[in-house]
Image 1 (cartoon, rainbow, N blue to C red):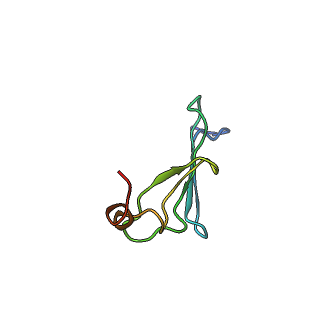
Image 2 (cartoon, rainbow, N blue to C red):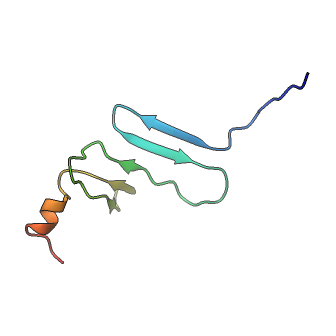
Length: 73
């Protein structure tokens, strides 16, 4: 009989159901990990980068409707 032992975790995906935040971690020099915060997402939310928190966000302030009605281009 062959025995297999796995002693290291190379890749992980963590989902926090309370805040709808998904964190993905992979082995190797990929750079900084950036979270996606969709806890305030609504229908037609658009994902954007929020520099002060260092995360990508989808919320009710940036949607298709807010870009079309009064958005700056």
